[in-house]
Structure formats: C-alpha cells, structure tokens
Image (cartoon, rainbow over all chains, first blue to last red; front, top):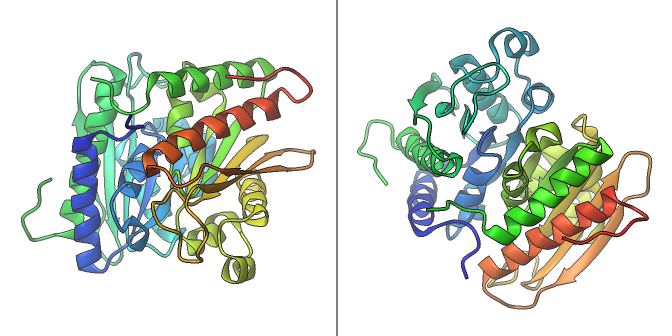
Length: 173
Length: 173
C-alpha cells in the first residue's frame, strides 16, 4: 500500500535528486497551490537529505509575505497568481536558506477560480539559482480535475528544477 | 487517476479542516521527515484555504534553525529527533505566521537509522496553540517500509491536530 507519491513522480524526483547531487547543489522549495507536495516528492529520492534543504508552504497571501517577503502590495493589487509573485517566492526562499537553487509554484488547481478570479489550471513557476537571473514560466493546464492539475504541476516543477540544475545541457525526466 | 493523497488521509484531513473552521482557528505545519505531506494532505480539504496558512519543510538541521529558530546547539548535541526539537519547531512555526495552531513532526522513516543513530520508526510530534502549553508525543512505528511509517505519521499528526483544536472534547478521525 503506497502512501502518496506515485511511481512517475518518484522516478522524476529521483532523477532530480541524482542530478542535484552530481552538481553539488541543494534545493529549497516555495509552494502555494501544491502545498508541500513537491518537497514531499523530492524527499522520496534516495539520498535526498544531501540535496533537499526543505521548503516553504505559503498557502495564504499573509504567509507569502511573512515567510518569503513577497510584496504585500503586489499580492493585494495583482493577486497571488502571476510571474512577479512566483519570482519573489523563489528568490525569497533562496534568501531564507543555505540552498543554491529554489523552485516556486503559485497557481489555481481549480475547479473554481481563485479569490482574485484567476482561472483554474493557470500555474506560474519560478526557478532561482544563486548569481543567475530567475526564470519564470506560465502553464495553463485548463479546467481539469484538481488532482490532475496538482500532479502535472509537480511534474513540470521537477522538470524546471532539472533544467535549472543542468542549464545548458539536456534535461528531461 | 488520483495523484497523491489516499482516501483515508483525505477524509481525516477534511475532518480536521472542518473542525478548524468551526473553531475559527488556522494552522501552520512544521515538517521534517514527512517533508510537506501533512500540509499537502490538509490542502486537499474543501475550504482548506480558510484555515491553512501554510507550513515549513525543514529537512536539514540548518533549515530547522534558519526557518524556525531551532537551537543549533541542541541539534548538534542531541540530534533532530527528540521532544525539545519537536517543541521548538512547533513554537517556531507559530511565531513565523498568523496561525494560532501549529503541528510539528520530526522523526526517522527508515529503513536505516538517521545520522545521529536514532532508530527507524521513531517520530516526535508537537502541537502548539497560542497561549497554551505545547504538547509533545512520541511514536515508535518500528522498522517498517518508510512509506508506511510516512503515512502512519501523517495520520497521527492529523489526529494530534484534531485533539489540539478540540481540547477537552471528543476527537477522532
């Protein structure tokens, strides 16, 4: 009876953990809609403790500001689901840890729009690496089962993390 | 194709979310070995956004100190798996958020002892509530599959959270 992380997620997470270890890098996560699932997936990897510092689950706007220093004015005027908030989450997580790579996720799993009327299925991710510009990507998974969007989001975040670690090289999981 | 959180975990999480909402309380998590799974389970509950502020995944000793202010001397001399670290994690999470209830988890999923030779299956949990003494409990799940210990740990943490919210009343999920 497996608990939580399915085989594909575990396999991708292991690829990321192996790649981080080879690169001598460590990661910190910053998650809103996935609420810790990315960090949990990474922790399933063998030897994850060598490259996973931890993460921040920032489910409310208040917690995004309190834990990661996300600008409260932007959250108020533009909501939580946009490129700037994703960027600030990733860079805030990097500041709050000894990790040298951070991945942030903020989006709407659905089935309904969020409180700021962002449509279900829209997810922004950011990858920050010490000394390099932060990359932000937008995904639109459409209006699907929240659990499907959740899983696809974690897979895309693992892939983004892999690309960030292997910048310039081939990357796929 | 469900992603991650099985029916029993989801059901328990929903009970906790409903109870928190009725009590007008909000929760923050602090997780080491479960690495975000408790927060992720809580986020599956309908209307979780009304009572889940977020959480801290503190996988390394350094991150326990950086994010939650856990005493570095205790981590160095006594390791990460003990009542005092669990207590400091829960109280640190409470300080770092607007939540009024915090649950912390630190333990060894196994299959091997941790770096400080704590045996697999031993997990400490703490529940902190503003203005009340923090409760710490120890579980020994024995040497079992890590995924089984992980799942049992999240279930016990959900139950501890429920009892903390309903102090004085009946509580079971």
